Length: 411
View 1 (cartoon, helix red, strand yellow):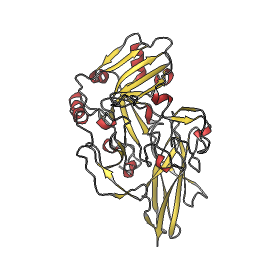
View 2: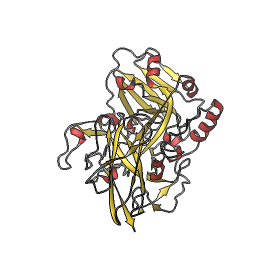
View 3: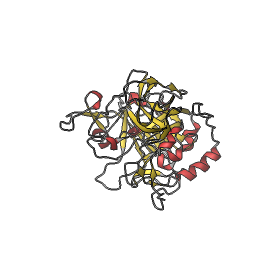
View 4: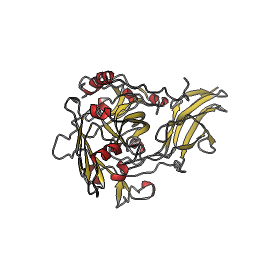
């Protein structure tokens, strides 16, 4: 199978096999005790040396934090259409991460402004009709470390993202089953993680009732055909395709339907953007009004060759990468091999859905020796394209400037 063939169909799991895998992923202790630290090596993304750390159930990954775990996907795994579960990035906000979930007692509760409150086990959810969708999960602060001037927060490079096939129950089906009352305007979500100290608010997020009823919004219990890894939200997580991962609540345990917008800390204070065109602000004159971050912007990256690679002048060189956006789908990808002076269209790979990575490729033949700066930009089906210069805001959020790659051609 070549890089542009669609991935093999995900084979459904029978209940016995699912529970075996769930036990392995959900009941293992996953705090960083006993983590292995491999010898630092060069990053395929930047060419710079980096130190990797290996958590249980994960490949060696760049650790932004160890408590709570924040782990970045190594760049080579983006050469696959679906990011492997053991290499999928990790982002938790609170210290007390659930490291053991007893499926005999676990329940998802749906309450608030509903006619019929629900308490559902994981088996209950799996007995309901399921759907699958391929969607990108990207941290709001992906690429934050590249902000100039720098901003506070987790200093991600570009690897706080991943693409997976998510399987679960549509949220709108559960809301219909519970019977949402007239006057409901918001739906609030909470997981099993906890802050541990009273001064830190628990991580609660909300969606408008209209957004919560969109058909693509899922309560996922499988990721790439396997139970969710513990570090990625076992046993259940909210999946909001096209929106940043701050809304994808992990280890989901509680859903409440509300008659007014939820205004807790993680909605009213954190994860907010300046209310300006394209969320841009001046570091010396910050915007007075902010709004919650929501939909992702269009982005594209090189995955081959590696940063700093040496290629042969006059010989064909394969270039490929990924592009994605907030759900309009990718219309085109263009590549420049002369520092952005001219652009040519790349070939697009199979369409795995409007919320998925879209792979692209082209062949380039370096005309001469020396240093070459390659650039890539994507345009969505709505006409949104990447700006030449990355925009700045105080949170380092939704960066999507044109990405470049430097390689050297030898004779």
